[in-house]
Image (tube, rainbow over all chains, first blue to last red; front, side, top):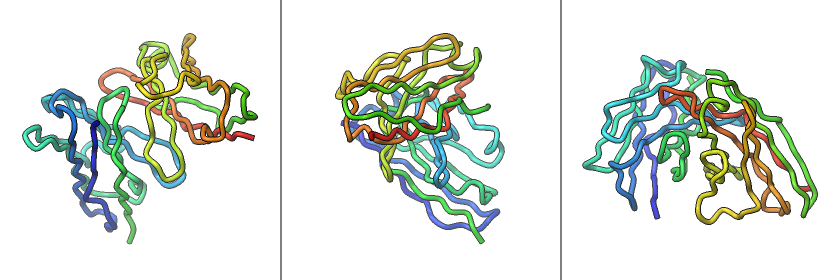
Length: 116
Length: 110
Protein backbone atom coordinates (compact mmCIF):
# COMPACT_ATOMS: atom_id res chain seq x y z
CA UNK A 1 0.00 0.00 0.00
CA UNK A 2 1.53 3.28 -1.09
CA UNK A 3 1.92 6.24 1.20
CA UNK A 4 2.79 9.89 0.66
CA UNK A 5 3.79 12.25 3.45
CA UNK A 6 4.18 15.99 2.87
CA UNK A 7 6.20 18.39 4.97
CA UNK A 8 7.51 21.94 4.84
CA UNK A 9 4.36 24.04 5.01
CA UNK A 10 3.88 27.00 7.30
CA UNK A 11 3.37 30.74 7.56
CA UNK A 12 5.37 32.99 5.26
CA UNK A 13 5.22 36.65 4.36
CA UNK A 14 4.32 37.79 0.85
CA UNK A 15 7.40 37.63 -1.34
CA UNK A 16 8.91 34.86 0.75
CA UNK A 17 9.85 31.29 -0.09
CA UNK A 18 8.99 27.79 1.10
CA UNK A 19 10.03 24.32 0.01
CA UNK A 20 7.52 21.49 0.25
CA UNK A 21 8.69 17.89 0.37
CA UNK A 22 6.75 14.70 -0.26
CA UNK A 23 8.21 11.37 0.83
CA UNK A 24 6.86 8.27 -0.89
CA UNK A 25 6.88 4.69 0.29
CA UNK A 26 5.27 1.36 -0.57
CA UNK A 27 5.67 1.55 -4.36
CA UNK A 28 8.36 1.95 -7.02
CA UNK A 29 8.58 5.73 -6.99
CA UNK A 30 10.58 6.02 -10.20
CA UNK A 31 7.76 4.36 -12.19
CA UNK A 32 5.28 7.18 -11.68
CA UNK A 33 4.50 10.76 -12.61
CA UNK A 34 4.07 12.86 -9.48
CA UNK A 35 1.85 15.90 -9.03
CA UNK A 36 1.28 18.78 -6.64
CA UNK A 37 -2.37 19.86 -6.25
CA UNK A 38 -3.55 22.73 -4.06
CA UNK A 39 -6.82 23.67 -2.46
CA UNK A 40 -7.41 27.22 -1.25
CA UNK A 41 -9.62 27.56 1.85
CA UNK A 42 -13.19 26.64 0.94
CA UNK A 43 -12.29 26.30 -2.73
CA UNK A 44 -11.75 23.56 -5.29
CA UNK A 45 -8.71 21.64 -6.45
CA UNK A 46 -6.03 22.97 -8.78
CA UNK A 47 -3.13 21.08 -10.34
CA UNK A 48 -0.10 23.28 -9.67
CA UNK A 49 2.68 21.19 -11.18
CA UNK A 50 3.62 17.69 -12.24
CA UNK A 51 6.83 15.90 -13.18
CA UNK A 52 7.60 12.92 -15.36
CA UNK A 53 9.02 9.70 -13.97
CA UNK A 54 12.62 10.60 -14.82
CA UNK A 55 12.21 14.32 -14.19
CA UNK A 56 12.70 15.21 -17.85
CA UNK A 57 9.33 16.91 -18.31
CA UNK A 58 7.59 19.34 -16.00
CA UNK A 59 4.26 21.13 -16.12
CA UNK A 60 3.21 24.30 -14.28
CA UNK A 61 -0.14 26.06 -14.14
CA UNK A 62 0.13 29.58 -15.56
CA UNK A 63 -0.33 31.29 -12.18
CA UNK A 64 2.90 29.79 -10.76
CA UNK A 65 5.17 29.75 -13.81
CA UNK A 66 8.47 31.40 -13.07
CA UNK A 67 7.84 31.27 -9.29
CA UNK A 68 7.47 27.57 -8.45
CA UNK A 69 9.79 24.70 -9.35
CA UNK A 70 9.00 21.01 -9.09
CA UNK A 71 11.79 18.45 -8.77
CA UNK A 72 12.26 14.86 -7.70
CA UNK A 73 14.95 12.62 -6.26
CA UNK A 74 14.25 9.03 -7.27
CA UNK A 75 17.11 7.77 -5.11
CA UNK A 76 15.32 9.16 -2.06
CA UNK A 77 11.74 8.54 -3.24
CA UNK A 78 10.84 12.19 -2.86
CA UNK A 79 9.27 15.01 -4.82
CA UNK A 80 9.67 18.68 -3.99
CA UNK A 81 7.97 21.98 -4.71
CA UNK A 82 10.13 25.08 -4.34
CA UNK A 83 7.85 28.10 -4.00
CA UNK A 84 9.33 31.59 -4.43
CA UNK A 85 7.81 35.06 -4.60
CA UNK A 86 4.80 33.79 -2.70
CA UNK A 87 1.56 35.73 -2.92
CA UNK A 88 -1.46 35.82 -0.63
CA UNK A 89 -3.41 33.94 -3.30
CA UNK A 90 -1.01 30.99 -2.94
CA UNK A 91 -2.49 30.29 0.50
CA UNK A 92 -3.80 26.73 0.33
CA UNK A 93 -3.40 23.15 1.42
CA UNK A 94 -0.87 21.57 -0.89
CA UNK A 95 -1.21 17.86 -1.66
CA UNK A 96 1.23 15.63 -3.46
CA UNK A 97 -0.29 12.85 -5.51
CA UNK A 98 0.88 9.82 -7.43
CA UNK A 99 0.15 10.06 -11.13
CA UNK A 100 -0.81 12.75 -13.59
CA UNK A 101 -4.35 12.50 -15.00
CA UNK A 102 -5.54 10.16 -12.23
CA UNK A 103 -4.05 10.53 -8.75
CA UNK A 104 -4.54 7.27 -6.89
CA UNK A 105 -2.50 8.09 -3.79
CA UNK A 106 -2.61 11.43 -1.98
CA UNK A 107 -0.69 12.80 0.96
CA UNK A 108 -2.39 14.28 3.98
CA UNK A 109 -1.75 17.82 2.77
CA UNK A 110 0.52 20.63 3.94
CA UNK A 111 -0.93 24.06 4.77
CA UNK A 112 0.84 27.06 3.29
CA UNK A 113 -0.31 30.43 4.60
CA UNK A 114 0.98 33.58 2.93
CA UNK A 115 0.23 36.58 5.10
CA UNK A 116 1.90 39.62 6.58
CA UNK B 1 -6.69 26.80 -18.52
CA UNK B 2 -10.30 27.27 -17.42
CA UNK B 3 -11.74 24.94 -14.83
CA UNK B 4 -14.31 22.35 -15.84
CA UNK B 5 -17.93 23.18 -15.00
CA UNK B 6 -19.79 21.25 -12.31
CA UNK B 7 -23.06 22.07 -10.56
CA UNK B 8 -22.31 23.44 -7.09
CA UNK B 9 -24.73 21.10 -5.38
CA UNK B 10 -26.68 17.88 -5.81
CA UNK B 11 -28.87 15.87 -3.50
CA UNK B 12 -30.83 12.66 -3.18
CA UNK B 13 -32.49 10.46 -0.61
CA UNK B 14 -30.97 7.21 0.64
CA UNK B 15 -31.35 4.47 -1.95
CA UNK B 16 -31.88 6.89 -4.81
CA UNK B 17 -29.49 7.64 -7.66
CA UNK B 18 -27.89 10.98 -8.39
CA UNK B 19 -25.84 12.11 -11.39
CA UNK B 20 -23.24 14.88 -11.35
CA UNK B 21 -22.14 16.47 -14.62
CA UNK B 22 -18.76 17.85 -15.62
CA UNK B 23 -18.61 20.00 -18.74
CA UNK B 24 -15.45 20.92 -20.57
CA UNK B 25 -14.43 21.42 -24.16
CA UNK B 26 -13.12 19.42 -27.09
CA UNK B 27 -9.61 20.26 -25.82
CA UNK B 28 -10.06 18.43 -22.55
CA UNK B 29 -13.08 16.25 -21.67
CA UNK B 30 -14.09 15.72 -25.28
CA UNK B 31 -10.58 15.16 -26.55
CA UNK B 32 -9.27 12.52 -24.17
CA UNK B 33 -10.60 9.49 -22.31
CA UNK B 34 -8.75 10.63 -19.20
CA UNK B 35 -11.57 11.88 -17.01
CA UNK B 36 -11.28 11.14 -13.30
CA UNK B 37 -13.59 11.68 -10.35
CA UNK B 38 -12.62 12.25 -6.72
CA UNK B 39 -14.56 12.11 -3.49
CA UNK B 40 -13.49 14.42 -0.65
CA UNK B 41 -14.87 14.36 2.86
CA UNK B 42 -14.38 17.46 5.05
CA UNK B 43 -10.82 17.83 6.26
CA UNK B 44 -9.62 14.84 4.28
CA UNK B 45 -7.55 14.35 1.16
CA UNK B 46 -9.42 13.56 -2.07
CA UNK B 47 -9.94 9.91 -2.97
CA UNK B 48 -9.92 8.61 -6.54
CA UNK B 49 -13.20 6.86 -7.35
CA UNK B 50 -13.27 6.83 -11.18
CA UNK B 51 -10.45 7.04 -13.72
CA UNK B 52 -10.29 6.87 -17.53
CA UNK B 53 -13.98 7.84 -17.67
CA UNK B 54 -15.46 4.53 -16.51
CA UNK B 55 -12.90 2.53 -14.50
CA UNK B 56 -13.11 2.03 -10.74
CA UNK B 57 -10.02 1.54 -8.55
CA UNK B 58 -9.97 -1.56 -6.41
CA UNK B 59 -12.14 -1.16 -3.35
CA UNK B 60 -14.50 1.46 -4.78
CA UNK B 61 -18.11 0.20 -4.66
CA UNK B 62 -19.81 -0.45 -7.99
CA UNK B 63 -22.50 2.02 -6.91
CA UNK B 64 -20.15 4.61 -8.43
CA UNK B 65 -20.05 4.74 -12.22
CA UNK B 66 -18.75 7.13 -14.83
CA UNK B 67 -19.62 7.99 -18.42
CA UNK B 68 -18.93 10.57 -21.07
CA UNK B 69 -20.77 12.04 -24.02
CA UNK B 70 -19.07 14.65 -26.13
CA UNK B 71 -17.62 17.35 -23.90
CA UNK B 72 -19.57 16.31 -20.80
CA UNK B 73 -18.65 13.60 -18.34
CA UNK B 74 -20.94 12.30 -15.64
CA UNK B 75 -20.65 10.53 -12.31
CA UNK B 76 -23.62 8.48 -11.14
CA UNK B 77 -23.98 7.34 -7.56
CA UNK B 78 -26.61 4.63 -7.21
CA UNK B 79 -28.19 3.39 -4.01
CA UNK B 80 -27.20 6.53 -2.13
CA UNK B 81 -25.84 5.98 1.35
CA UNK B 82 -25.22 8.45 4.15
CA UNK B 83 -21.44 8.09 3.78
CA UNK B 84 -21.66 9.26 0.17
CA UNK B 85 -22.27 12.80 1.42
CA UNK B 86 -19.10 14.61 0.35
CA UNK B 87 -17.63 16.94 -2.24
CA UNK B 88 -17.02 15.45 -5.68
CA UNK B 89 -14.52 16.75 -8.20
CA UNK B 90 -13.99 15.81 -11.82
CA UNK B 91 -10.70 16.24 -13.63
CA UNK B 92 -9.58 15.86 -17.21
CA UNK B 93 -6.31 15.67 -19.05
CA UNK B 94 -6.01 18.68 -21.36
CA UNK B 95 -2.81 17.96 -23.27
CA UNK B 96 0.84 18.88 -22.60
CA UNK B 97 0.59 17.43 -19.07
CA UNK B 98 -2.10 19.97 -18.18
CA UNK B 99 -4.80 18.56 -15.89
CA UNK B 100 -7.94 20.58 -15.20
CA UNK B 101 -10.30 20.15 -12.27
CA UNK B 102 -13.94 21.03 -11.94
CA UNK B 103 -15.12 23.45 -9.30
CA UNK B 104 -16.63 20.67 -7.21
CA UNK B 105 -20.14 19.49 -6.35
CA UNK B 106 -21.40 19.15 -2.80
CA UNK B 107 -23.54 16.02 -2.59
CA UNK B 108 -26.13 16.01 0.19
CA UNK B 109 -27.91 12.83 1.24
CA UNK B 110 -31.31 13.96 2.46
